[in-house]
Image (cartoon, rainbow, N blue to C red; front, side, top):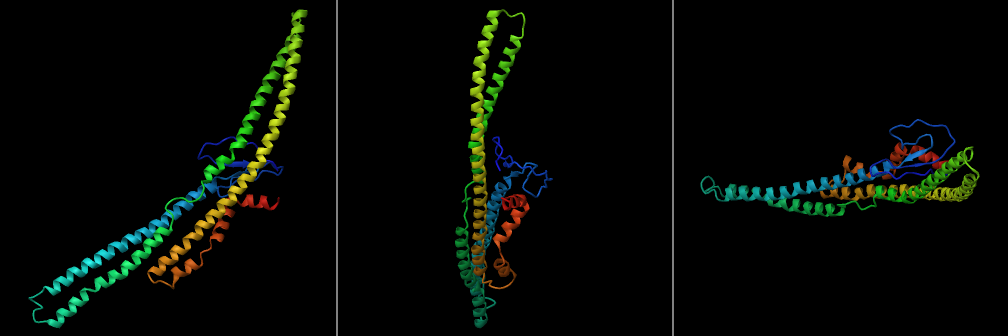
Length: 298
């Protein structure tokens, strides 16, 4: 099943490949990869999928960083709180002058902020380590760039085919003009001989141009076949990368809970039930259900 020649699209435009089919047209829906009556596959969802995955990763990192900042501020506030009240009770020579055990009790309790700060400092360091384990930047190849690069050879082949077709059309138009001139009864014998020589030359050029067109068509078909393989490979790689991305979120969040000594409950259960493959399959069914059925019939 050959691909149709695809014109180069500007960045941001839907990325499609056409697969010729004799099957009747099927209506498109906004939730499926756009496939028209020629089974035209819109690959732009994998570009958006990568953008969404990158944003998701950044949001998780921002969430952990925000908690890290809260912990850092809490650490400082606890120490300030302890210093303040410890000084107040230890320096209260008026109301606590004779209350030795009361003063000792209040001074001791007010120092609890320092102990809490030690625990917070430990969790704060753990959060910073989690933060460092989540990538700041996109670590996977750009799907947009990959798909655009995959179109380079097919666009080149199509441009060459268009050039040869234009040349052939121009020669055919020239031949028609010569034949019309030969029908002109006002032309003398010498003029007609000249026109016939021109006709032979143009017909020879048309023969060569037709061969060029046929050769260009074969190159275009070859480029279409390679383009289909390339886009299928890019699609498969995109799903492997997004699976890796989703799986990479689990461990940092597990450590995140352990940092606060949360080992049971709904939070823990949600992490244990995390199933990236299930999520990706649901995504593919939503955007590429017809592609999946097409692959199963090949």
